[in-house]
Length: 236
Image 1 (cartoon, rainbow, N blue to C red):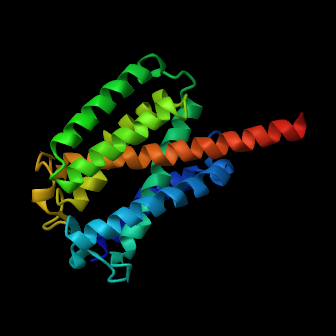
Image 2: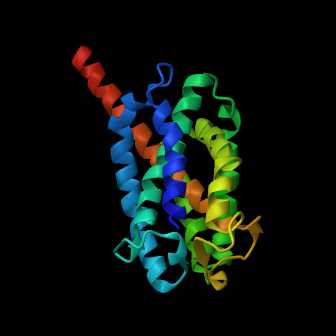
């Protein structure tokens, strides 16, 4: 059964098709998306290789094609392309369809609450590698967005996070963790996480996804702004 491969392909198929919609035109921002996703994928794949080697999580060969690279299944490599594509497409589409930044006023205070909460939980769980590293890394990167990058898009990021993680994520990650199938595509060493689940999904996955999406969007916005600045100079 090629369950994991099908999940990746189905997750990206509709966003890819609608990338050429005349109102959305997401394909016109591929110049920003592709470097963003490849840089982010390099970080997360390195993390993935280590954690798979250490037995923090792993993959059930019953649901894979059997093709591996650096001890990771092909499907896991594709995950870091397909899921970010769908997620950043959602972010960009919401920006086009909803012009008002509805979370603009609460983005900064919400970010500080998240930073403090993530740091605290991470520090209290340093002995659990999935929990500790994921929560602290997410807090550090969010802090960098506020204090170093001075990001103006966090309100829109939170809207996209809600849109992705309140719907598609629950289905996709639910299948991967065994919600709708007999086994699990991805298994976890529960001594390395809080063992608190939303349905079958470890709570850490929501923070891992937060970090993954935030890094992709941060870099996407960076490359978008670089292009806008270059165009301004060229036309100025």
